[in-house]
Image 1 (tube, helix red, strand yellow):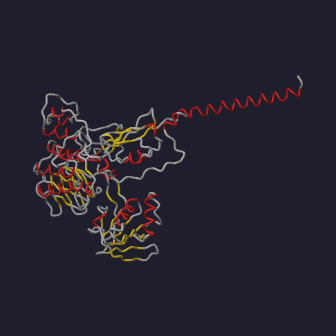
Image 2 (spheres, helix red, strand yellow; image 1 turned 90 degrees about the vertical axis):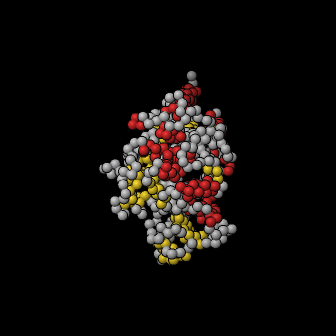
Image 3 (cartoon, helix red, strand yellow; image 1 turned 120 degrees about the horizontal axis):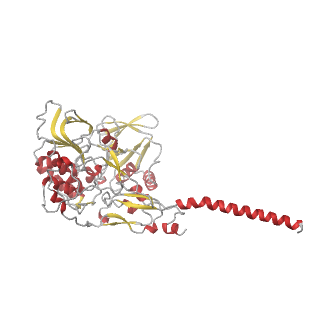
Length: 515
């Protein structure tokens, strides 16, 4: 064959082989990548789901809905895999994980069946113990007191206080939420000495600070309230009013604006409790602290005045006043904006040590910029509080000079320290559990101890060995009723993050599956 023809043919053949080789290599590299591209799927723990609606509101493609006040995946094919629902879930009830794998475990406090820690006599109750919802908290408050009586607590064993600066009680209760109030009423019923130490200025502060008109739901609906504090579906204002009426009638010993600083177990098995206002010695300690943690303090003179608050309760309570907000996050900006509405006629000042609001959401940044432009809010960047006086605050400004400003109220909104570290320092450790982990219904814990609703069927719930002789096990056999929602969800929604802004290239699960 003519060499002129053979040469180009050989070259073409070589090029064809090279192209085929590269195609094979590219396919071999791409195949493992595609095999690893698995979808993220949802796992929802109904017990930890409080029906707050955060995941529903933040989902940009309406994948989730509330069914019986629990989050459910309704339109999974519309999921764009953004994982925002898992990010905003306040109780880790909703997580996302790769299909074909196990949901990530959750860290929960290491507690026994009756929410007693590894430190005998130290209890953790309510949401901080991984058991949210008001009715659960009320039941656990009573269960802890009954459990204490059936172990090694002897009423009055510590006798009268031995020193003028030391108060001896049977039980120290930390926190005046539903669990703390229920525990105090149970102590009173059982003739136990006790004291309730509350860091805030009023009882049940978490619920009391709910938005106006928000309903407090008597959940879970398949659990009966067997504590001594009444619980029912109600607007928070009415419920708090009714609770205060009950507390006035029974006369509970509640010490407000008292912060517990340290709890130590003594060699004799008692507990030494130190607060910022006193010292206590107790046989048992019940922590009913919630999950808000301890608000951070400025640690400046005058911070303990009544006009200085760690949270904003109701903006409508402040009209025609000069108010100071300290902080530069979303909570500080939102509080300042709510206080600076034209109808309230307040003069609002923000003191922030930073140079700009770099940590706030875009929507809040736009709103605060508008309020500044309209002169409804004055922002002092680079400033720090030096002290609070009698009706005034002294600020150190960015240029270094100090200035005294008359004010009628101040809000220190600089975040809080989660209670995990504080609990660990007291000996309450955290252990990993499967995401589906649930604890027994709380009404049944009380029934184990006080023996109600006898039946011939033997329950199958685990029982602590040292208490096995005290329970009426038959009370555990009653069937559980299906939960029902009693109030439309739009009447009790919380303030939640704005919906995620979608990137143009975001794709739905249904599109991914067809690729």
